Amino acid sequence: MTKQDQETQQIISDVDLEKTFLGSVEAGKSLPTNTLPEHPMAPDVAAQLVEHYRLNEAKANQNLATFCTTQMEPQADELMKNALNTNAIDKSEYPKTAAMENYCVSMIAHLWGIPESEKIYDDFIGTSTVGSSEGCMLGGLALLHSWKHRAKDLGFDIDDLHTHKSNLVIMSGYQVVWEKFCTYWNVEMRQVPINGDQVSLDMDSVMGYVDENTIGIIGIEGITYTGSVDDIQTLDQLVTEYNKTAVMPVHIHVDAAFGGLFAPFVDGFKPLDFRLKNVVSINVSGHKYGMVYPGLGWIVWRHNNADTLPEEMRFQVPYLGKTVDSIAINSSHSGAHISAQYYNFIRFGKDGYKAIMQNVRKVSLKLTDALKKFGIFDILVDGSQLPINCWKLADDANVKWTLYDLESELAKYGWQVPAYPLPKNRDDVTISRIVVRPSMTMTIADDFLDDLKLAIDGLNHSFGTEDAANADTDNKTTVHN
Image (tube, rainbow, N blue to C red; front, side, top):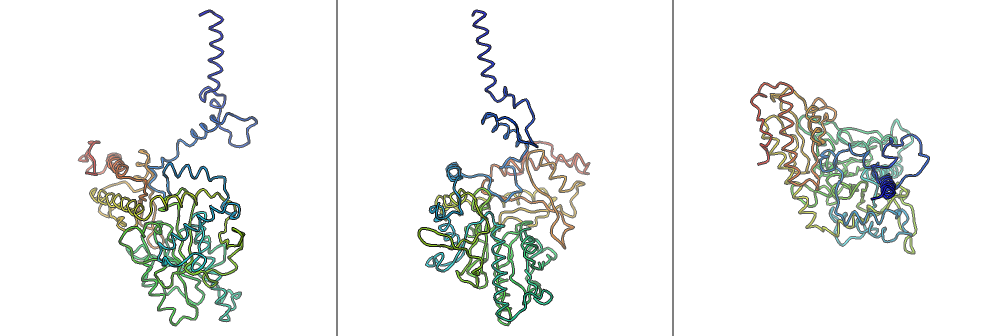
């Protein structure tokens, strides 16, 4: 090769290097953070930099803290990508997205005990939301406005807040959206404390918090702290007896963000839905056991009438030459999540969802069995209902470390397992919690249990636990056999 050829080859190599990510000018600089950069960069370079920036975020399959879906099928991913440019709020412009929304509402409503002969808009009504929190907000607003109308009919002076300030009854382990609702709309939140080993709504005391100014009682199907479920069936019976003599009958809204799309497919649950007389509305997360990426939620009202969903919450929008009610609080948002939810429903059907949720429960029960074998944990929630595992250190556990230490140790292996105190009245108890999602296969669970054993052995050695010297140091020994 001549000298000229060598120089030419070097120029070509330099040009090619500049086109690669590692040879780019941007790869040798810190990411812009405070001000917009002056000049553009190649799209592949920008994408790679963003990926590098996210390297220290949790791997989805090792995030055992989140309730949210972290994995969908490739076909669903493609559907969502293709629908990202649609606007779900514009029903006349995207009528097929609006139709899929109605199909999903109907399918969910019938899962929740509404007879198959009943139809959306004729007998019941519902809407998609941006997460279950918006569903909670809408459910609370419907309870509030319904109470106001009924209170006025009875002659209450609802502007006299000393006599008729509205209140909402809920157990103390509520999701924060309910606190936001009460703050935003000036509603008194009456928290029913948890007592003893009970980690759900106390049926012995709940009705003592109810009076003529109670807009509703919230039953929770999957308490965020522990995954416990309120006994909605017993609550319905209590409310039925109360309403027989009540000046102002009270309604129930079920916050089923977690359990609403799990319980219908497995056994072990008492009725919690529209089979119960006093349940007027239910919300659920599509992005939990609906198996759609965040954020998608749903809410359904049992009756399509002004008492259940007051007129002031209904806004008329054009749709296929007529008008339909727009109920959601949000404005513009992509229809991608609705497409994905409809895909999941027609893709898996009842049998598919049942098989998936049964596998989820198997994994949750497997974790409970393994946790018991360590001999140092007390199991608070065993995954036999909703697939959550919660445990605390046993009072007689011969260890010098805490669950916060275990959380940190597991993080070294990439696992996110949160530790935190229980709600008021039991906030002296610290627990750890795992949420088992459909993407957590038994293989992933086995891998976690291997690392859990290594983490516990490491903590015993680090903290000088008395029997640490006798601890099994064979890293290949597993606890999932």
